[in-house]
Length: 591
Ligand SMILES: Cc1cc2nc3c(=O)[nH]c(=O)nc-3n(C[C@H](O)[C@H](O)[C@H](O)COP(=O)(O)OP(=O)(O)OC[C@H]3O[C@@H](n4cnc5c(N)ncnc54)[C@H](O)[C@@H]3O)c2cc1C
Image (tube, rainbow, N blue to C red; front, side):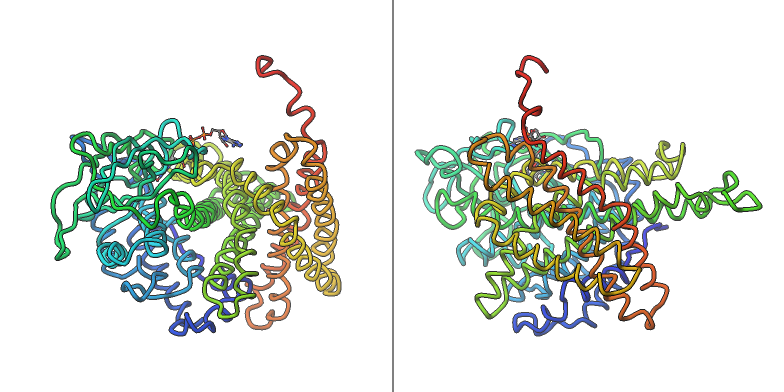
């Protein structure tokens, strides 16, 4: 049986009230979508996640994928669950109707992705990667490639993978060495990729690999990387499957978590060379891959939210059951939920989870507006907002997920350290989320270099303006809102001056930006979290009579965040203010 209940009510609230679902559904592209229809989709998805994916979560942990004779066998039961996923059309929700998708907003696709990741993080990764691959093919490949691959990928009949990493090329993709040699209308691919998620399995009869490789004589560095579609089985002109391609998984990694997700070493071209088809133009591969990476980054951010929520649900349930000690003010011994410190942990988990959910959904809906607004100025502004929020959504949400899932273990006491309860699995599964799809350090560099500095802080200024507007409304909203208004006022000013310092002094100190980046990102993420929860609390005030329990909880959670979490922003900024001196002071040999 499942112990996961998708928080459909909160998801729906965030989509409607914070992420502007109504406005998104009003765009001509989404004319088939409506808020009510989305709500029904979320309810059904929640049932599917807890009924089909969640019961296999522990099994995936205990009986992870194995690789034998160049073929990966996934956890028993996953294939059947995945087939039900395909039959239910779940993979195609946010895909283009042109290829059989339902054409719902990407923010709705992401919400549902939160459910898959919470219910079964390992299995959820398979459609997550597939959808990124669909986006890259749809955005950049020829019509012929789209016609050959997209409809089967959208339906989920074929899965997709992302092949970037090589032993010497991790964060630095400029170092990619896999080779592509032209041969008629295709290329032959030679090289080894490592860490490829769902790189092989037996759940579907084909797998579509997207592979970064270099064509002979391509320029050095990132300007010489091209993107190729390399199917596991070649596809005949009539759409039937042809020969086995020369691309084989040769091993799977033994990992700290997500054991049910095969993380493969894939050899391309051990024999005659793997047939690959160029996507778009030569040497534009990295730019195309970014289509996929932005999608994946937001979805990994929401994976952090998912595991945080799962940890919270488990911790609440344990805290309600476990009898231990006499809480201050009580006459009888009771359950641990009575102890103020346990409640502090639960509130921290709750507040960080809700804040990161809001951040991720708001970022995703900005891209819905950016990609589909008819007004080009609105589209530009929305894309710019989505791009600003993406590194925060990815890095802040996954960093706080480490804390939340660890608190989940703590609330279980000794039992948290014992695998049986499942709290440890959630923590182990969450650990990778700050690493793949660009580590926290890489996200922070992206925030500083590309998002803040590139337009001289223009988009950042717009975000600050909007935070200040919420702060002013909160300040006038009564005593429950005072701490929200004060914490936003104080911290947004500190953030602004930290960013201005980096903007003005960065050129004179090459180390400054990299040294302060993660602290600035963590402060910014915290402040955006506080901003979104204050917005939620203001909506709650207006709607209180409709559902007093739900909305009163929203206000308390936002107050808790303002009073107990927001002080962290000041500490991060104070550390950032100390600059790079001590960080760079020791010689390499002194470490
Ligand atoms: C379970 C799992 C699944 C994965 N799935 C996929 C997949 O499907 N496809 C795929 O292509 N890859 C995948 N990866 C690879 C993953 O994306 C990389 O591991 C990740 O990008 C980090 O690269 P790396 O491991 O080489 O670490 P490195 O790049 O060596 O980084 C090591 C440390 O140095 C820091 N660092 C490196 N460069 C910089 C810099 N410029 N500035 C600041 N700090 C820096 C990093 O932040 C990190 O702390 C997966 C990895 C794992 C473990």
